[in-house]
Image 1 (cartoon, rainbow, N blue to C red):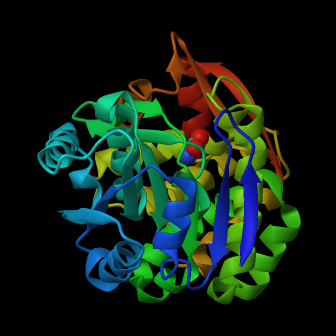
Image 2: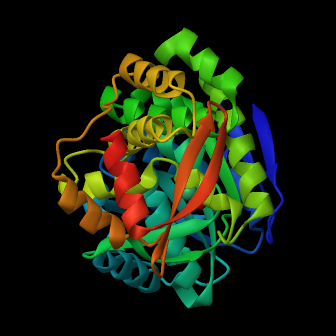
Amino acid sequence: MKKVHVPVSTPYDVAVGPGLLESLGKTVKSLCPKAGRYVLVTDTGAGPNWASMATDSLDSVGFAGDTFTLPQGEASKTAANLIDLLNFAAAHRTTRSDVFVALGGGMVGDLTGLAAATYMRGAAYIQCPTTLLAAVDSSVGGKTAVDLPAGKNLMGAFWQPRAVLCDTDTLTTLPEDVFTAGCAEVIKTAVLFDEPLFDLLAREGRSFDREAVITRCVEHKRDVVAEDEFDTGRRALLNLGHTLGHAAEAESSFALSHGQAVAIGLAVVCRAAAKTGICAADVPTRVDAILEKFGLPTHTDAPFPALMDRMLTDKKRAGGTINIIVPEAVGRCAIRPMDTDQAAAFMKAGL
Ligand code: GLY
């Protein structure tokens, strides 16, 4: 088992390795000694495989608790489900000393985190990511949110978990397409910070060592979050591929998964950066090749005006300026503020 310490305003550890859910109860007891109850939040994907192991472990150390299960998928990340979860916690007499446990992917983690942030003005929560995407990105760093009809993650808060327990056994039951979607965030991390990791992924493809690669990605995310917890500067780098990606995801009415959309966004900015002289021509060639090797898309056929319209409602826009993350090389990226016309021309160059 590997551990990564995250030194933010309320510091915590990310543990990565097999068997962590079996000792969940003991871990929660030591981190939240005043808690008597838990609310375990899961979905119809992770729940049937892993919820009983988690609740058995919690029950075995004397906790009482209840399980709240959401339909799997981004469509569940709504304000209505957030309110249902808060009502569920209140109906089960959960106190602010008790603990929320998120067992699932990004949707479950983001929604549970926001419930914990707001329940009685703030309760503890533990992230137990069961997807690769949640393990390497969304479970770490304290961004919590639900979506609004106008866009993704428009209602949220920064609220750090008490711990992240990434049990790599849970990845064994992931459907192939969900695992593939997570690979997009792993490749994104490599393009951002780590050429040796990029080369390893290009060599090993999908058979990469789960524990080692997740830990490496979490270390990179930890470094960024420790420097810019509240996303006022460098943390924007993590949005590489997300501006166009979020637009493509919404434009497909979520037929594209988040990971597929990020893959498209990543490929587009790499091609755009090469065409505008920001990076060498081999960067998009290598990035397209690795995405294809992992079974991820590199193009969208959504109409450009519709994508642009979506990009302009993205919350990463500030006034007339939008921060586009551009690759300068594999392993090095920069934040470039562009006005909306520049951003449109740049993205169009990469489509
Ligand atoms: N997922 C991007 C971030 O945590 O900032």
